[in-house]
Image (tube, rainbow, N blue to C red; front, side, top):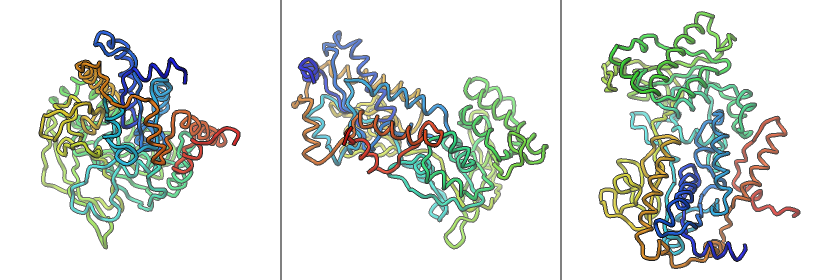
Length: 491
């Protein structure tokens, strides 16, 4: 490190960000950009060092471990995040767990502000009778398996021939699609590890039922998700035509929002496709014989999971109707569908953070009126100095990448405003030595994986993928991550 860089890092603002997923990376980038733009005007200067802490051995959070592997957009998002991390003012500390390896007190002593971007990895609980039966699974855990999460399961029981998926959003679509996937097709197009390929290859599912509580116009699917569902080799799509009998008010309401209109148009295209599949003799989208059936049920609210000897044997669904404004009415009539497994994708729950109050109702870290400033209690507006939250940690598990970027700009604006109020130009951390955090971690026997370490992991994954004609192949073992990251050339 040159003397100039050392001086710059000592004199600049010091920010700690917890979580190296999209929320943390975008916030780091926007902070540096806004500081360059506004720092002199605010009396803060334009220099800052951001240390980005991630408990997993690799960065990118839900982009790597929360999105189905066959989404083509993943590689573009990950590439953009990586370019942001390749910035001399951003220092990556993967394999460092907040609350265990470093504490809030450690960070407040060394950083002028701490920003939590911890995301969400747990399922909201399914509050239905029978939810505790064997064969009931949360989407987050299943996604962790097929995405090769380092802390996830290595095997998954895919022995059910009839499966139900509960949910009206994109995660439900991801789960259903992977359960209907052809293993060889998936392997050829994605970075799945060997254990996931072998698991999906042995999958016995022949019939899948997707249950959406509300109507066609109230679903939350993206058009991209629907188009990916349309092109599943060996899968016949089956719909109930009655679900598509929309009244004039519902059609008018759907027309008012561009994304809703596009989704409904795509669903009508799927209805026509399903009819053609049936008319042509139960075939897939290419006209080939289908050996798996994918039923899509709107206006269907699961009410109970039925079991026998502790295992799932059926799911009971109540028929509903949905008004133009999205209000759902239960009709009191029920249908039981024989299934041996049930997956629920009804939302994620962001994790709590050591030393930070949690808003259970909103499922996010306690912050003042959604502005990202951490508060003492969930229902107490008293703000804690120098602590902030962004992304799902701030607002709960809603919104996609666009919302995350908007959050980042809002939070960074608030952070700069607060830092500018300090007489020292925001520089309030007592320990301003940029190497202090490295010494602390070393003393505790913690060996972070930095950006160069990540690049070594990425190079290895690409090389392994190339051996099989693929762009990438995931490593899943934490110890292998560490060995690759800390490998010294020539040793």
